Image (cartoon, rainbow, N blue to C red; front, side, top):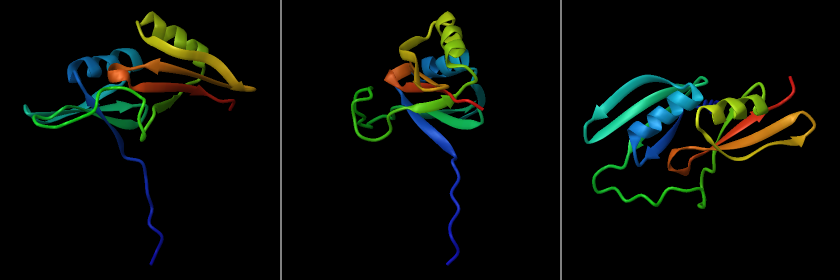
Amino acid sequence: MAALRYSFDHVHVYCTDIHASERWFVDLLDARVTERRGSPAAPTVALDLGGVTVLLRPRLAGESLGPPGPARFGSDHMGLRVESVPDAVAQLRARGAVISSGPRELRPGVFVAFVQGPDQVRVELLSRPA
């Protein structure tokens, strides 16, 4: 059997307020809405965020989701590469973002910061030397 090939397709984010989440990703991170689909009972907003598809959707009727927050097993954050973490942090602060940690230098030339997104989604900003 030939080896299977895998490629990254999307990140799916469940939102307490899909409209506020959409505005946050578009206004702060310059994501672009590429599609609105689904039904009124199950709307989905597709965003392009640096070439990656981020799908937003609210809790569906009767669906039981845990409270928002990072203290759980499973995914912890999404990471975005930027040219300069300090510059990105300054721009995001000017746009009203909450920076939960950083910027800090992990090792020579590698900087990181974390942004607090809607529903406590953590977004990492990372810059590495070329």
